[in-house]
Length: 297
Ligand code: TA6
Image 1 (cartoon, rainbow, N blue to C red):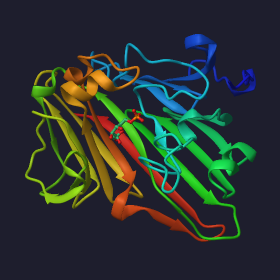
Image 2: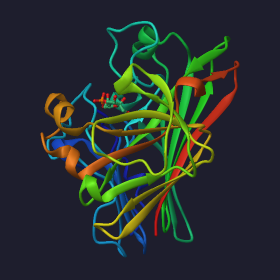
Image 3: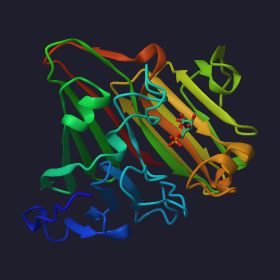
């Protein structure tokens, strides 16, 4: 667990480092529009709220565990350097090691009403043991009247490196049957619940069964419409041509760790990704940014 509590990063009224759940350090960003919370464990966003909207925007599992080597269930886990199973070693954890690593705060800043916090993670002997490539990561979270986040990856090794990833965002919905997703038009997808078969989806995405799909949408904007909360959550991605949509539904909810049996009723995931057809290869020294901006209307 990070021991970083440098008050040098605090900005009164805007940035505050704290001890959060199970004494894990987190950073709270605050401005006139709302607030966000990011744990140094995984550089994981765990909360985003806007004063103008009563209901939380992100879903957090009531059974989330804050412990070493454990992914926090909910918010925005950073899946990197692989999305899903390890490409060659199925003994490795799902979705890579970024979300279970201890990041450090690199810098904090306020510019007008935009509050920025940047976290850093670099390769070390523990990461090289499972992924033998040097890297530098930066994760910047920006709170304005929306929440932006960007994962900047640099290949610091002497060889080309292929990686996949996702910003695995859990959204809070009133009831799953009230929620639909508009991906900007019919889109091809890989259906994980049907042997990754390639299909073409109709619009909008509805949830009446387990949904676990990697979409290749026509644009970079997804709209989560929720008639129960009478709101639309807009997710605009950057550096991504694949969007993962997931709801575990009844059976999988029962088998998932740190996830309540009825959790599927009030959550869904829309994930800006580099997955499947959209994995990325970085040349030595090359950088890639995977980002998303979450706003409400
Ligand atoms: O993004 C969807 C998914 O790949 C599902 O297949 C499910 O495994 C989910 O991620 C959660 O994975 P996790 O390792 O966080 O339990």
